[in-house]
Length: 325
Picture 1 (cartoon, one colour):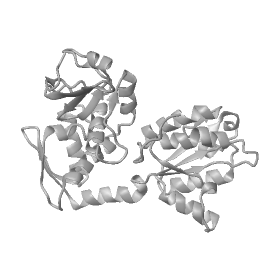
Picture 2 (spheres, one colour; picture 1 turned 120 degrees about the horizontal axis):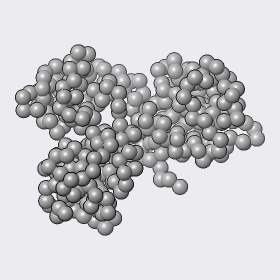
Picture 3 (cartoon, one colour; picture 1 turned 180 degrees about the vertical axis):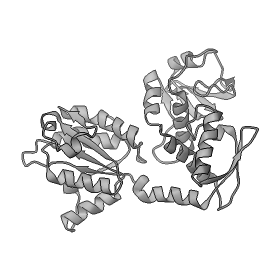
Picture 4 (tube, one colour; picture 1 turned 90 degrees about the vertical axis):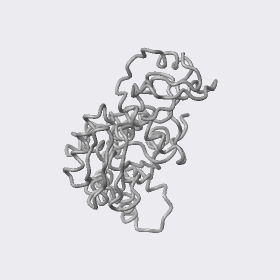
């Protein structure tokens, strides 16, 4: 087995120039890879993946990209070095990764923007900074993503024979990224539209499911009846939705207000995550019933499924996730 300071093969990207760093009793081995960044493996798990011929990791390129993203954000509040103690940890991180071609291409564009000092600045980017930010399996995928960005008019330059890139963002590329930020893509808020019955029968759904599920995904949940304000309630609702990254609509009770708020969010182009208690789902409005609802029976079912739906379809938020109970 590799010793501290030795080079080793990275289990994620298979590069042979990763470095085995300090080993602790709590984390096991820390691996620093030029492509993936730093992550840790628990001591028993280390024996499996740091041997000469380790097993393959499903969606390893997605895990690698997420590890590198967190490594780049290591100085930001709430971001920690990823730690793996089971195969489920790999799958959990891969589930959070962007998978659509457009999202992966924009991830690469965002990294170029972070490295750009001024308009027209030419970047010389090595291979190990291209593959992970594009969540790419190989160099051929990076080539296609760069072609995509150039075809959109967001990037100029090209890939070089030494597997690096000489590129620069166009004004349209900066505008594309700025436009996405104006569309609340950096918001840490999630608006919750739900029924508030006088008998408090949905209080547990909020306290044990919806609220902790949103917080576990890295967002701050906003429920309008819990907010302090002096505004007209309808103006306040629309204002809060405009500030949100997405809306969670629980259709239990089939309330007109929930449908209105969800429709208002969709009109703004915001994602909507749909929920409904099973005994009410049969009465859900036919205009929304075809959306993929998280159907629940008891509040405990909501938390994890809501967290995973948000992480998988929208992406984790910027807030430090709350600890699980």
